[in-house]
Image: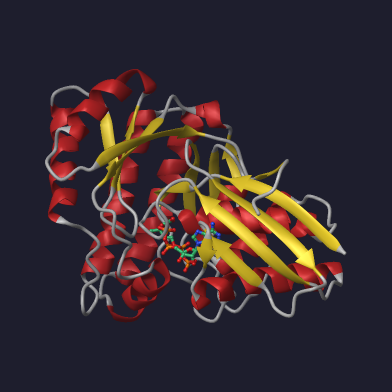
Amino acid sequence: MLRQATALAHPNIALAKYWGKVPGSDNAPAVPSLSVTLAGMATTTTVIFDEGLAHDLFELNGASADEPSRQRVVALLDEVRSEANLSLRARVHSRNDFPTAAGLASSASGFAALAVAARAAAGLPSDPAWESHLARRVSASSARSLFGGYVELPAGEEGQQRFLPAKPVAPPGALPLRVLVAVTTERTKETLSTRGMNHTAQTSPYYRAWVEHAHRLFARIRAAVLAGDLEALGVAAEESALAMHASAIAAAPGVIYWLGVTVEILATVREMRSSGLGAWFTIDAGPHVKVLCAPADEARVKKVLEAIPGVLRVLIASPGEGARRVDGALL
Ligand code: ADP
Ligand code: DP6
């Protein structure tokens, strides 16, 4: 007997960053975060429950995935199996149409697509909030990709294991926004986000200040989205990214995700602003820079970014929809 389903999800980029977990929790974030889901990049995942299998198989981008990646997939499948009272093992085929493990949030779209495809293949009804909660326990940022547009993930509470999904804040059209991703290297990152944030929490003297400040930044960013104010959003998003990286850089030893070209891009974005062009940056756990601007300025901003030595290419994304089932299958 075969039971299968396919889902598609987009990565998301945090405007208010998540960095740090509630100690002892089921991967609950220590700070609230707010992201925008990005159409233009996608993960497609097919899950096939198959009685002929002795254990779960996970193929990513056409090759067998490494064991830690497979284990994270198994963790989510186990949750779905227990919910559906199913004992079958699964074959999971997934494809990212953008670089994997490079700071472009492949884990976010990956676990969101997996949560939707696995529950559908197990015969469970669609439930984005529950799928978001399940995805969050494997990788917190992926909880936000279940929903489209602007999405928040509240902070968890100490000593409490509870239902904690992301929730939509505003639809994709709430702000006139483009996100330009200046790609700076083809290499995968050396310090994965989980390790980077745990090390920051354990050793950075700035971590507590980050957690306190992150709550204030989140409130400003949420208000800017609801007001449709791109400039207020851009300014606060830059502050969030820089405060998160400052906490990581101050860890011992410091976690530095930036390359020389990363800093060049930051300076160039600030120059664009001084010359009257509205552009703001944000950076995740990697060296690439994501630049926010209005759709009308997209071509000009792209041209300036492409001219920076060391920028390999510029990807363009706009606010998109949440994770969903699609027809067809990856086999
Ligand atoms: P990124 O910046 O791309 O999110 P991370 O290091 O946070 O990088 O996550 C990369 C990891 O996410 C991969 O090593 C793999 O374990 C997992 N991952 C990436 N793509 C998928 C996918 N499509 N399905 C399931 N897991 C994925
Ligand atoms: C810098 O969600 O990858 O992208 O929950 O440990 O899997 P885990 O971490 P992850 O961290 C994302 C960190 C970030 C900021 C963000 O997306 O909010």
